[in-house]
Length: 243
Image (tube, rainbow, N blue to C red):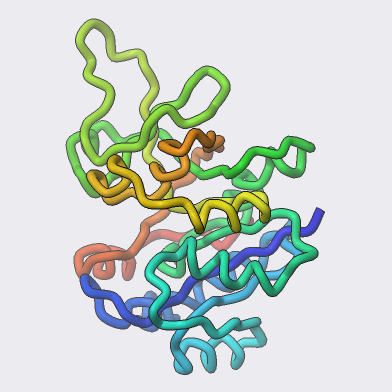
């Protein structure tokens, strides 16, 4: 099986300008993400998809692979799909955002484990046990699953409502995805949907159109960097350099 990992590295960011080039513990954010993905043994190829010559030069200088993409592309999934068109021999496409500098190779293996086991879900994603203190935080996206591990719903709201017991599992969703290549090319053309627009969560588009998302669980958690506060926390985030 051939697996392509695409790391969208758009230079424009409203909440944290030029964030993928910002230094974290002495290394640019996008370099952290690329190097960790490149250590995942099941990936056939890892590429950074960017609209920035600065990002491209940085990745090429460390021996990495780059695909230049149009700056008008709005989402990471669209940028990933655009790159996947150049790799028709790939079976699975991973969309790993450039603001995940502390992703571990073993987490990426967990993400694609269903495909490696011979299953062919439309798409998969990662989640880990939710810290109860983040239950009411809209920045912590919650996901509920059915008994087969498929997502029932993603929300920024506190779900579920615990009326009787608190035994129902709720997970903290990570915005990392793997797709069957053919489904990714289909997904990019699906029109936006009401729940997607309401929650500002593009994965809901797939579910509203009747597709399933397999949720792969991990015990690890990372620090996604979107805000100045998260950037400051990243300078002290304890990252064990192990797979």
